[in-house]
Image (cartoon, rainbow over all chains, first blue to last red; front, side, top):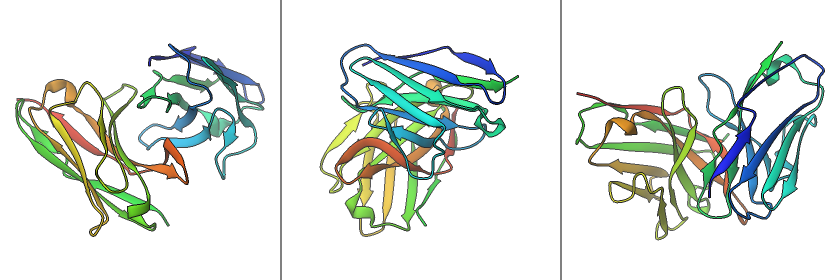
Length: 105
Length: 121
């Protein structure tokens, strides 16, 4: 299963709402997870099952979608959200998207 | 506190072998499925391998199948990755990652800090 994220990079201002999309090459139900990775650090689980927020993750992060199309939304973008975000499917084996780098203007 | 600490990375020649280890603490190791995930320099994440709680079910990415072997020692709270016939494209930071558990599989809730493997002559 191939995972395709868009955009590859986005630049937004603090306080903006940001949306990242992830498309699976075939049906994956809601077996879709999102991770945040900052430079030099290990990834951090944000959302699993397409929309369940991992414990400790700020509520400005949310996920939606099912089937093949999914979105990660960051409402009211903060400086500390500057990172690369990856989607990952867990329907069949495991595959990551190529990542979306979020920059602050 | 959950901790995963990888070791064993280093410089190896093409065609060579290396064994990575991941020491787990802070949780009941034998009740969680485990994985290896890698990241080539400046690139994205790539899942490499999975092992079930008992160690009897193993999965591999096509890119490493037949060359890498995942295993675990529940008595030692340790995860391993035996890597053979290494290629330049295997150069990456290798992370061990714990499955979320409680019926959820393929969701990585804890990660180690990673160990760098460089394959070069």
